[in-house]
Length: 127
Image (spheres, one colour):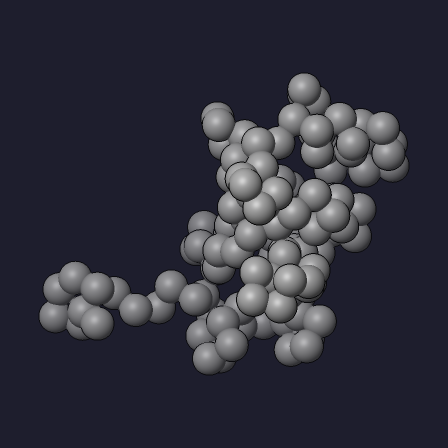
């Protein structure tokens, strides 16, 4: 599989394809994709990405996912204008989950919250 900085290799299509080949996709050809704020460490959102969405994230440096409900690729911010500029991509040990570490242009959640994880389910403020 690919070893090294995939974002630095973005100009090398064969390196990108080698990285994509090394991912462990589920039965729907998806991997988990988590967007995390590079400055605060906050988890912004979690989605799924197919091979094309991961490739787009690498080459365009914008967090891109695959919508299971719409069965279509989408780049976070294409509707709201609140893109997530991806600085680096991190792969977990099982190669089935990615973190898009980046800078959000604005609120990530469709509710207007900075992160989709604003509801605490334990304690006095629990849902």
